[in-house]
Length: 149
Image 1: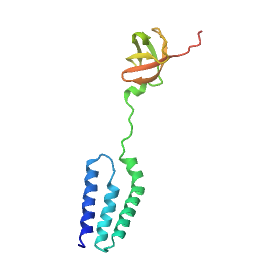
Image 2: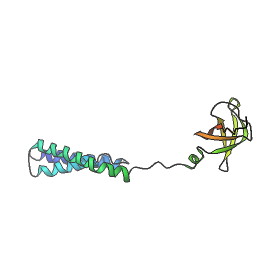
Image 3: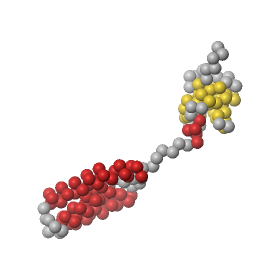
Image 4: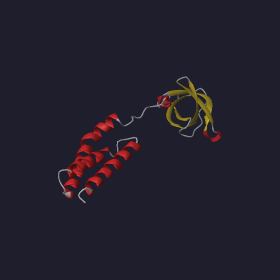
């Protein structure tokens, strides 16, 4: 059965290609290249260890050489949302912030947000606060020290 290794490599090549087609990122194209090299080797040698070695070598070289390029050009980059623009900005308290009663609102960049105090202390309306983080649709804020104490 001298054709058996060729069939095995062909099946592996098709399997790796199907896995690659079914996924979003490049995950098995390296192994498909190795399987193709091993399949081509079956036409020149019957030595199975040489075929396996060629599969491993070509797969490793393809992975080492092409993975950085695929990460650079194929991987999606994180895109900041509009909500991220408010982080670190100053805001004005429009409704007293009281975590105990789950009340409070601030206006930042022209938009009104529900707000909570990061420290847990109540913050009166009219105060200037700094946006620390976003959780869901709530901003967590801390009072800005104005030096008038």
